[in-house]
Length: 285
Image 1: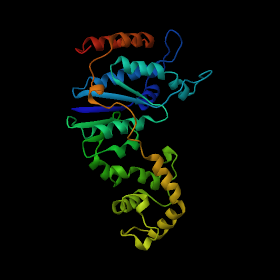
Image 2 (image 1 turned 180 degrees about the horizontal axis):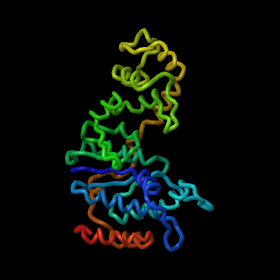
Image 3 (image 1 turned 120 degrees about the vertical axis):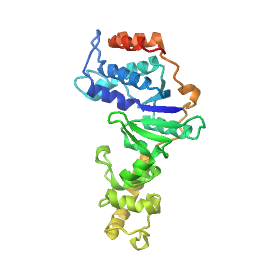
Image 4 (image 1 turned 90 degrees about the horizontal axis):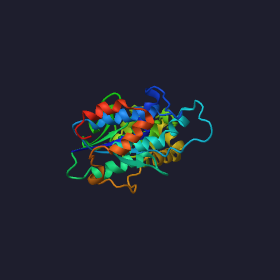
């Protein structure tokens, strides 16, 4: 069997930006939840989708006028999004203090050694989840581009092993995440060094002790020495938690069909009556 772990925060924001803006009869924003209902329903209709969980970051309700602030408009739909997930009969993991990524990482860690599980599919575009990949047993799926990244694909792409992704971020950085990295450390040099040394902590201060040939090793070592504390901090912050107190058992994640009454309430609030036609053709409804 396959277990699908979905980044709900990403899906909600994606639907907000990708689906038409919409308000319901009460004037409340519901466009993102409309899109969420459709995309999750599409996922559930897959023949291999039997166990599912959706994790959300903490999305506190905005105060005052929403204006045109995308973040506020999305957060205003969070409670309704949670109800949509529950209505679809999917296990919901709402986060507090931790991030959705930590919930997905915990689920992947707990389930990867369960004998009945053939594969865990983490549905997200967030590269932080690359650290959870394990062979072709735990993979990351970009549902937009329909690209699956397993361990072989990650090695070809970045030249590292999955558990080294926090080290990679610490050295190379990521402008989209606001991570500066260590000056001079590009992808090629980082991959070469991490193929010899398992983590930032193990890279010798003296380039003369490096057991790997890298162009500009002296400068790289100097920069790392100057920024080592920052790199180690970034690595620690980029390392996902795998011990959250969430119930990841297959019994809890098994999808048994929609919660008809709850889903109908969400459909009425969001005005997504077009879902009824899709559900009527669905035996599990």
